[in-house]
Length: 226
Image (cartoon, rainbow, N blue to C red; front, side):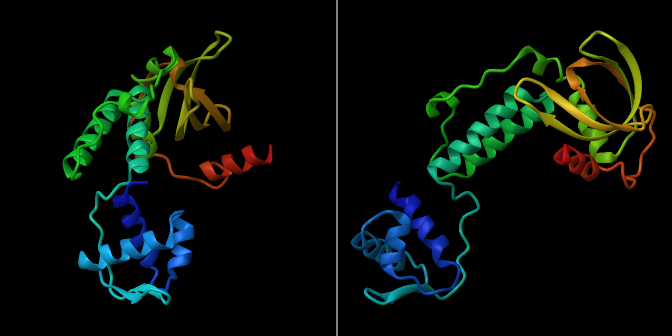
């Protein structure tokens, strides 16, 4: 762990307002007690309101407001990998949003973030079914947010085609495909639709109200029970 990351983590531990022994902090950070002593001296010299002494313990006497973009190396890696997944598995609107997020983070960091995912030794590959979902995803996301009724033309895996009037509740990503869980008014039951198999969507401009027995939580309870 870089020393800057360790100092940040130490402040996080001390923010609970309790007295912490150097030995306990050393065990948590997996370093020596002598290293904790040096780190505490550094924090005090930097103006962090840490009080205490060796052999007794350390306590933070005043609130400390950390910079909004104080990420550790591993946190940056997680953020970058997450945004890379979005840029490979989501529609153009979300792809552009992910790029803007990385740009903002990069501009706010004292040291630039890695520019490409290759710098992390990772790569993201997607299935053709994912790209086939991109055209319908923005409308479905909007319908979930605004509780809009959707009319869809859908082809099942065995080739049967049908038209449904649905109340979209959420979207799910399964690694190779996106799905939409919805309340189907034709079947009067929950259904999960593969988004890449939706041929087209019509929006009649009607809103739905979440009703008991037809909410996402009801579906999840049934799913867990099965």
